[in-house]
Length: 117
Image (tube, rainbow, N blue to C red):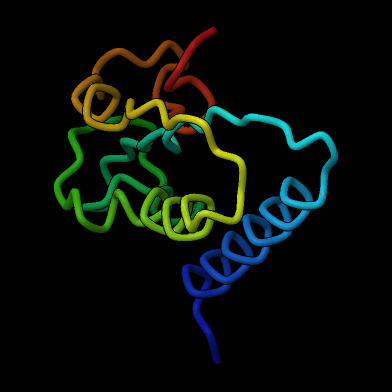
């Protein structure tokens, strides 16, 4: 049986592949600026990812495992920067955002308040 992380990874790859196909089929071809997927800073996991409600502690902390934490961006890069999607530029914000673990506005919600707009 697959674990939740594997299922989420497969869904992300599938979603990005569908996005790439839709962009490639569009006429005129749009120019896309892709922004890095924001890091999460949940203190209960080395990658900072939300580990499920059972491990949720409502506090943020620095990312301990940057390789695991960047996994979503590696998938996005592989799918969207393959040359088949009209990605004009990538806003590389992950390193800056990763260091800002203590700047959340949501009182421990490390998913929805990483990049206030």
